[in-house]
Image 1 (spheres, helix red, strand yellow):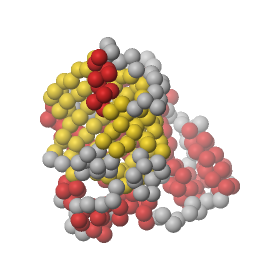
Image 2: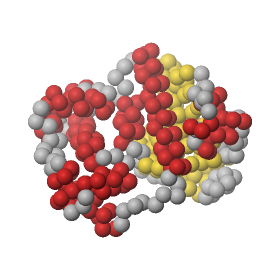
Image 3: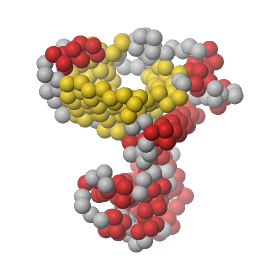
Length: 335
């Protein structure tokens, strides 16, 4: 297995017909770097949005396998990472409690602290990896802490003493609320200073959602899903009924009757399996479907509203903007 360091990969890129372009101070970012080569293409946007808090948006597609050695020398930062698409492998043998080989993948979010660690990141052919990463200095997080009781257990040594054993935590699925913020970061409607203020507010919101998910994981670590197989099947059946009846969804009571389950068990089951209520799930599904149609077709906003179950286009536009931070019309212009 051939392994490049980051410096070697860049040198190989530039010496074999590849290109590198770096633009500074553009679109609210400190720099945007674009790399093009026969082996891969990559775009990296970076911004330090306030002292001790930075954002990195990466989109990379490989056309051949690439193994890149990454050294976290003096990397005394807490990293929060969200995968929008794709996956890649990691080989790292020095993190206690973590497998030597693991995968980071689409739809998942991670929190890690890996100072002075060497790892190998593995990228696979025809796989586009799109991720958003937040890097926070310990002092930045400490400024928010009035007591340790509200801090996730894994972060308490860092907040209290400024040091901790290395850790890499798969926090779980990207929740609907997280998806909304991720989309808002990717499709920010502002420019310049307003964009930087907006991005800072959104990555703080994303950190709050992730740390809340981690706290929930810690408090329910011993908790077992209270649903039996029959109930799980019924809740998945209820989900299918909702998405197959976007225009006229049943009421909660009617939905529960259709799948022969108590309505409170239905709500509880949706929260356990999907992290939200039945009708929040439906609303998120409608909005995601609408966004995809707007981006991938020539359909009008009115026809898209109708397709996802809205008879009133104004109500649709308001719901869309509430979720994604931009209007359906503005989203369509990105097509």
